[in-house]
Length: 400
Image 1: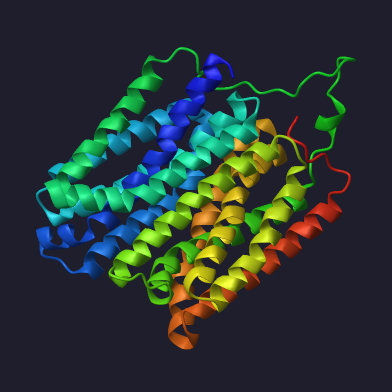
Image 2: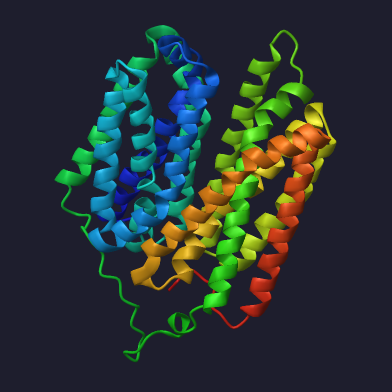
């Protein structure tokens, strides 16, 4: 890996971890924040919902910004904006300022995924492996933040947590500002073949309807991911008792273990996407996750934990594969736009999972949430099988 590629991977892995850390600090410090402002949990979570909504809706505009201003500049805005807002939240004296800060944190956070992935897809040759490592960094942020935020809040209070986490954001901004190896914008052109023309693998771009169908699959996977993440801690606390430990703590600890295991899937998926047909690998990962999701809804105790580990392995392996695949599906000049559309759909459709999961739980029982999600996986796998069949003449390899 060249020096420029190592720098890109370093700054994007840091950014991926931070974008999730900034959003999830509130979850780990929720009790202290509600007590500090004298507000109800409903009021605090309403502010968090507004921030998360902007986190999703801002993905498409961030794609436009990255396409026009460049992924590096967009990433600089993410780092500086998030750091300053986090510091402002830590210094906030009123609930109004705190609320504005949380919403702005969602806005600046929405700039990350598009710009970070565009930087990887345009600046690193072995994109699959890089996508896998990038995914691991994000998963580490997701898995560890609630526990670390809770622990630090119990020691210092919630305000210092935001102030401390502003520091790595400022360091990321300074790293990009002082860097001279990562170009502000990438001029991406097709590789030239031996005869001077466009190589054969670059000639067969997937038809537009296949790109649209793939986007639909990614949107459904957003629903599956958010539904799983929303209900798993509660489900584990009800179905996996641990002697001497409260149900709430047990749910949190086991869930953290399960999500940490997903890092293996992300590295494996990214590594294999450099060496295999991405559409077939994507189809395999989605299909393999289906029986594990069914088992989650039908079991308890150790079998439930093992089923959740199996699902996490294959579902998290999909993420670097689909991000790598999207870089292959889109013309180079439209990669940022493609990621913007993808994350808008993923976060937008995924935001429906909380309401759907709550309705299914109230009406039929919490275990049925996972059976419904298994049905969504079945539809997703069917669509992918159709894409693979219709796209038989398309080159799905990564070497474009």
